[in-house]
Amino acid sequence: MLNKVMAFYEPACLHVVLSAKVPDILQREPSDGVHISEIAKTSGIDQGKIGRILRLLASKHCFREGNVILL
Picture 1 (cartoon, helix red, strand yellow):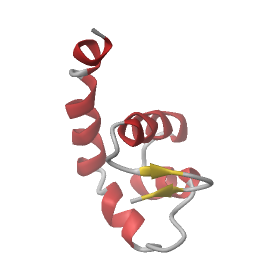
Picture 2 (tube, helix red, strand yellow; picture 1 turned 90 degrees about the vertical axis):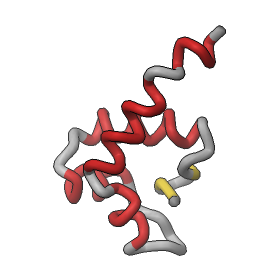
Picture 3 (cartoon, helix red, strand yellow; picture 1 turned 60 degrees about the vertical axis):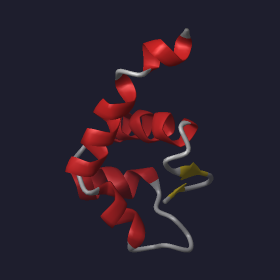
Picture 4 (cartoon, helix red, strand yellow; picture 1 turned 45 degrees about the vertical axis):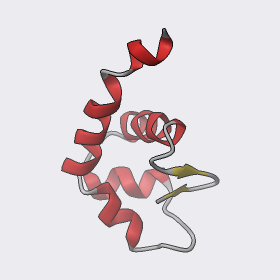
């Protein structure tokens, strides 16, 4: 049931990430990843918001999360 409820958020989060060109930001540092504060500053999206969006997408295996967010 939870997957059905969350089905709305996944495409919306993908839209935000792709519109802000977050994958391009992450490709600049492919081996080490990029800290969420740097992603927020470069994309112009609030750090808390982009962090929650990327965490949801990491739970769907679109990104990897560690000490920094990895593509």
